[in-house]
Length: 167
Image (cartoon, rainbow, N blue to C red; front, side, top):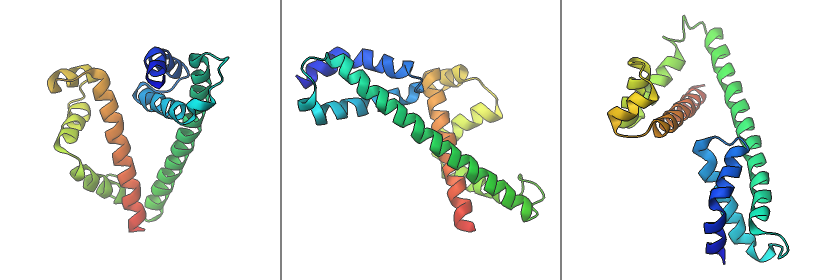
């Protein structure tokens, strides 16, 4: 019964999640959470409600949770970056290109896998669009955009934690 519901509703639920505004690179994660909830509470699914309708209700709630979580995370990251810049300014760093942020960025960049550094070089040194990078790396433009998003997020997290550890 569970497998049939997943097979019959998966495309609709994924489209519904995307339609709620969840970024493409996170749609599958939210959809997976929907089906985990289905598995956990299959015995509580109302018999008079079609599975797709019930799952859309779960998806709506999980999308709202996703937006709350990402909004809070983005706010905290912005606050941390402001604090970093204020601290660097207060400590009299002549410029960010020479200060602790740049030092942290350099260290975090060196920790990245070679493929990630290559993508960053193609994007920011050669200023190539995602489609061209995808051709060079035998991938898709969407996969490159998602990978770059994740690489930038990992760099940001590394910089924040490095600077926090130094202070």
